[in-house]
Image (cartoon, rainbow, N blue to C red; front, side):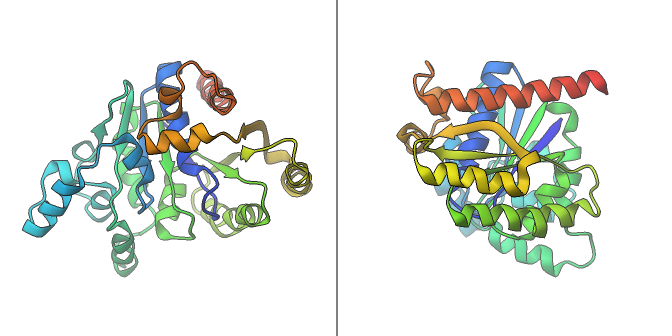
Length: 278
């Protein structure tokens, strides 16, 4: 199982859209077994795949009764005895499973900080290692923060991909992601590498887009991927429809769908090449 994190310290750059779209495409177009791990307290990836029954979750919390169907990724972080297979849920899409988030994940982060008996940053990795043989890919969706949750995600990962917009805040988010998270984690998790940086919601005709490309090329030229995800309302619409982009646009009439298909093919081919060279 290859584990990939999508992360940028700036919000709204398309992390969830990238995770859900690429994960579904890896399963639907490349025949991969894919696990999506949602470690963002907002739970947008979990909501898109529509597997969270919030009424059931609220009732279980009020009754102080935990049932298997109410478990979420936070439970795995605080309980080493819990089997990940009891938490992972099958989505409506072939070859695609979900390790769901829950709004209380932010509170669980505080519990992790308070627990000094066990290493905090290795919790997710230890749990994902237990299902490593079950999947070809695990894609992790993260919140835009410098949190212990994101550190857990990076420690568990083989690669990190950084989506970005063309605005200054998103570009500075790359710098914070690299220096405050990726570089720090590499010191004790040497397997982590940067898969690349790519633009989302891209509009090639705008001068700001060309400016952003030039600015990023001056700092991170070796990390810029030859893929841009063009801006299209379909990307936002499919999240409201609670379905991944390819399911919303199966004929790939939208350029953004084709853009993601090219990026997904690159990620799949890279994994296959690494497998042959192993």
